[in-house]
Length: 418
Image (cartoon, rainbow, N blue to C red; front, side, top):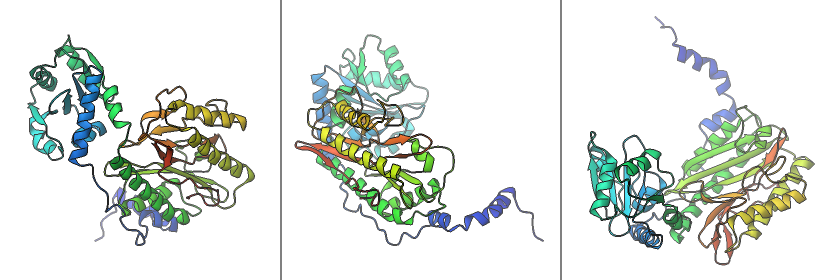
């Protein structure tokens, strides 16, 4: 006897007519046989580099009068110690003192798991479920005779860590760890730049595979699924694979409305991946079919805006001056002024490295001078609400002789991938 269909089965059966649409099938199960992993030669960050990072951090602590810094799980913890952990109500933290080995503070039952990714010599102190983990941190500082010296709190640490330290050591001065953490992480080494280059190579190879497979009728989610699948096959871990179609492209991070690829519609993709902990971020825009005169003009203006930003990126220049240069150019073309629309409603670029967005930004008022090893996105998009938007984004790293691209910007709307 045939049993009645469950509600889930009935929904699945009802969806079958839609699932046979060719574009959706290709997005769900694309033929990736032409692609292969290109990340086999990636060289992970080794112990010598992490030792240099810790030495640099301690030198910056001495220069800034800081006795130790406190870091919660996240990219900064990975950067200094290799420990890959997550944030929860149970504190795991690293304390880096101005001298000597760092200390990992973690729950007793988590210690074996934390040690699996610990990549530097470090003391590990544990706390039990009925104990205050910040008392363990305070004990370490007292043992190292640092309880009367300023302690830097990493900028993403949660308030309860800051507040707990303040209550346990009321005479201690808690300060920002930015001079130390940013002082290390903002300037990338050749090993870091090599991993960022490889991540970008993966993203560009995925773009080259996806672009000819974008067809009329596809949604942004379907196009993004193709990009993610290609990225994985090429060896990258997708961070985001956003595809904005038509009017949705006028809003930098899209719309909840579902738009489908159609003749004369802009397709704006913003995609990035991670290789060995380092990220890429590349945006490309094109028109499905024939571009209108207005679409072509906006695309050409954005391409020029990228070059204006690149020309302004010079060693010693304030980071905000790149954003200012682009806005002067756009205002001369009738956009803005400032961040107003139609025009460029967001910063010209952001720092990038282990995080897709990290300090500092190419934004008006940012005074940090550019230095060799700093890495940024260059993405001066133009957005026309109710119509469309164009964003071309390529990242670069600063060298002593100026900026060097991770990916090469495209030269024409007809060849948008580059």
